[in-house]
Length: 272
Image 1 (tube, rainbow, N blue to C red):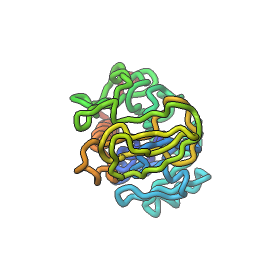
Image 2 (image 1 turned 60 degrees about the horizontal axis):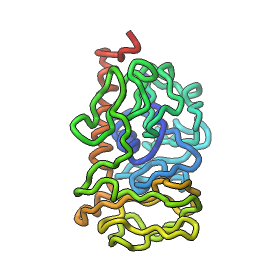
Image 3 (image 1 turned 45 degrees about the horizontal axis):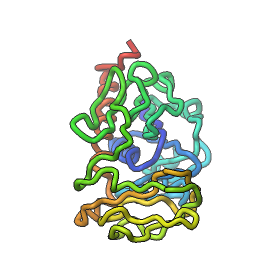
Image 4 (image 1 turned 30 degrees about the horizontal axis):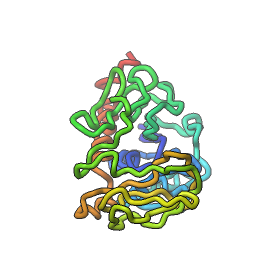
């Protein structure tokens, strides 16, 4: 039986799904862009695109340059990740499932014919049209739910509430330029602390808390780009270095959808 799953995206939410499927015995191939912009870099397999190899909760991911190198990674228990913005792997690597985990809030080119089972995470996909199923990614009662008809809840642009804070905990660039990080993931910060610069423009902490995520140094950013994330719960510093509850809930929905498919129970409304 083919146990290979191709996953688009290696950010922190995608990493929850990648880690889950890897530990469940699937051969996962991750597709990324050349310069990922994950904020929660300490728990994102996408960091391997810069460092060559990275590790999250004891699981390693390694950058490869040819699809043929994936097999060696799987043999060594390592997740291969490759720059493949157009998903050419779909034509080159035998697989049974494709998961679009880019969390781009829009469809980046995923179609229902890219695998026997195609799954989209979050807004931007329609179950039964461009994917077989959609997994809800919005915090709340429906998080991780499998959607067989229609779409996930539309993106509101407002971050979920953590420790009583929503939009205040996420920091965006006020101008375009090159990002220069000053603070580091896991640092305790106070409101008003200088944590970064975009060109020469200072970026200050918006509240007291733990710096849960910050963009990689040296990347060019447009205006209003997400560059940092603060967790107001000072006691939760260790959470900066582990896969989040949200990512694990989404991963559970993906795994459930795959198990349902493998047991022949449902193929999605688009595959009647």
